Image (cartoon, rainbow, N blue to C red; front, side):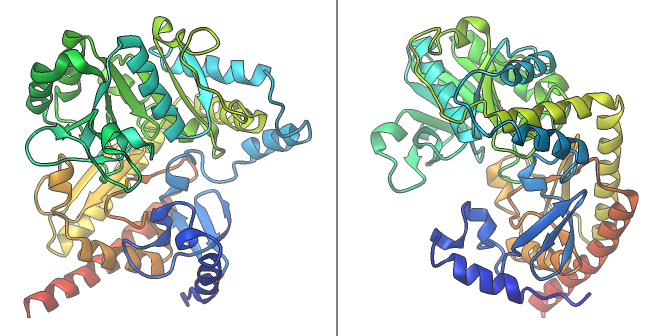
Length: 439
């Protein structure tokens, strides 16, 4: 394979003339791993193709939505028919009701659903709703869990188990950040301590039940149950941000896997079948506070867009049609992780692998990873070597140590075998790096 990114490099330079950093979402810039991001020309099945003519087995899947694979013919067929009927109406459609029905049947905690266009909109709206319902102002988030780029949640922690938030980005007022409290993920005692001190002021706890934005991290046994118990005890709402894990770790999301019932849930990615869709929903008595039923305002010109609804309906129908879909793809995901882990061990590495359903992750760390602090102990330089070695062999992984990876129903056994073989070559380069470091 004669790997080159010359055309992509030229395209990247041109993009920087018109777009900040040349990209419309920061991680796409490859800043974390260095080098040139491939500019993608098309995608089909398990593969994406760049403008330089390179083909990649894709484990990013547009950051999670493409659970069926790219350009699934039935989804494309439904979209083509919908396109001929118009792209946006700004008025109610039967499609919105149908997708809402499918979601409420899959996720019973969501008795009512409101559609928006992004995960950021969903979490922002859910938090506003929680504050209105509880008549409290403070919220709790977990360090390393990402819930979008609105002001309340662009917060990092200070010292100690809990702290008043400090803005993670310029432009976030201290007055807003001060209402966001932070604690490490998987630290039930730390969460309980926050509530003992400030529970009467806390409107909600928002959590990724299966975090995917510090790399993929799994909850410790009993942890999510403890979070649910603490919020119920103090009258705060529990918001599950399942934008990533929803319809990914199981058809009913992480709340199905762990048998936890949150008060509100945020969804995205898979429910749009690759188009910009997200949703928030929950108990009827809470959701009926949303306008026009109640006084909490939220609106969107393109919310419930007919194209996005069509893609979401088609995707969920296809997921339901094959009874063993999740079982089959989960087995493939586990086989891929086992194969890559065996290659790592062959080269003397005891790196950390996490997997649940069709999500997986690899940490370049010899010690267990269970929160953001332990994730940050990973060897970023080694990951970057591995990433580029895989890319050059036609394997497309997220360009960051701190992102999850995704399997799709379009990946084949041949894809798995090729990826495992490529990982052996990549780990050999990592071993060479370590050898040079010791010399």
